[in-house]
Amino acid sequence: MSLKMRTSYKTLYLTFILSSICIFLYQYHMAIPRMISLQQQSINDPNLPPIYIITPTYRRPEQLAELTRLGYTLKHVPNIFWLVVEDAVDTTQLVTKLLLKLNIPFAHLLAPMPEKYRKNKVKPRGVSNRNRALEWIRANATEGVLYFADDDNTYDVEIFDEMRYTKKVSMWPVGLITKYGVSTPIVKNGTLAGFYDGWNGGRKYPVDMASFSVSVRFLLSRPNASMPFKPGYEEDGFLKSLSPLKLTEIELLASNCTEILVWHTQSKKNPNAMPLDTAKYNSTNLIQLRQIIV
Ligand code: UGA
Ligand code: MN
Image (tube, rainbow, N blue to C red):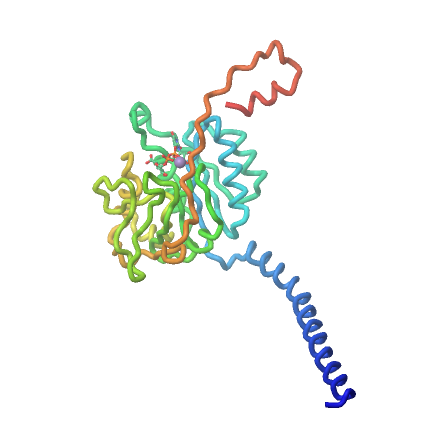
């Protein structure tokens, strides 16, 4: 090959590489605004089925911290409606203030635990709250999906995208539960083959509250479905009240239950704060802070 020909091959080769880079950069540049606009569109997209997130909560030192963390997680989820139900007689002003600040569509409801259960050693936690939210959904919702999201758990936002299209009931694993470290449907050959949970208790559905979602239409087709005031059997009782429901109708999410997208985290219980010496700290910021701490 002559020197001249070799140079022209080189030039051709270089031109090809350079133009490929140019085309790639141009297309990348063009794609950025599209990616951003797709993201924004999905945040406001009214065509997405709504997710009704039901969160029981009650006044305690950790309450605002838990709701703040959960609230900022939920801000990443398009088309949600947050049902925050307080186990209290009056709404907590600081909770209302947080809800308004977060700017997520919400309803702030009240459902105190009935007095007769309050005396029990093991209380049915969050049950009156969840039943109140179910009542709200029956009165106000027609489509979408509902999910019981306790205020103290940890949620990967991916689970919300997945549960949104639930036909009847969807299920997935929850991490940090009992001595097994996880509570999950057992999946064999792509189908539900039982449940793996550290405590069975003779339950038909040995699952955690955070492990399933239910379609609103399906709930509405079961007018008597509700949650029993039976500690340890809340999930099982509620799911059984949705019958008839075939195990084969349960949709298995989180890549056929091979991923953990929800954790049953529990905050350390903090003792109530010591009373403030208001004489000593009069005319200081501590007077205002005293309204926030429990
Ligand atoms: C576990 C499950 O994850 C709960 O969904 C289930 O209700 C509970 O067990 C049970 O079987 O009693 P766990 O972490 O042990 O939950 O309970 P908490 O997180 O203390 O309470 C569950 C939810 O109810 C929370 O959102 C909490 O804020 C609320 N709660 C708790 C009340 O509204 N009132 C209470 O007196 C206690
Ligand atoms: Mn909890």
